[in-house]
Image (tube, rainbow, N blue to C red; front, side, top):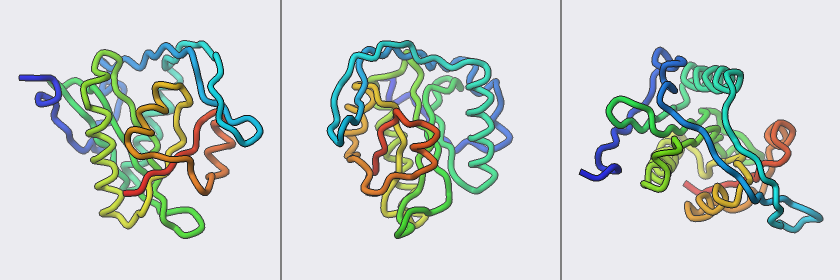
Length: 181
């Protein structure tokens, strides 16, 4: 059985969002190049760093996922042998001038599970959920690494027509994207 077919995709309930959820999850990402918007043009720059989560980062993410569940958003996990290999989260509140966006706040795949279609499957599940909940588009404030942006472009994302000020304030180096659902 191949890895993609052995994945189980399930909605994660609030009571299941705890530090144990991430026990086998590896966030590690080596980044060498990132996209930056300079004078209204997108350029690739050498910006090497290692992206890993600290204990504080895990606590912040767990809190955000809890809040999304409590507010009736969705958190979907990809599990293999009961171990989290990826997750996606979408907030439930429509926003934007035309109230057409839902916020895809999180999309992560564990390092050893990348390149197996898990991120693609999670993204498609998020799009389905967003459409069922009245959205026309997903809004994404995304990691600017070349690899992350290649994934989002392959999923049909484009630069957001309407930037969310809170996202740009919190993550000024992120790429602000949207995707029709």
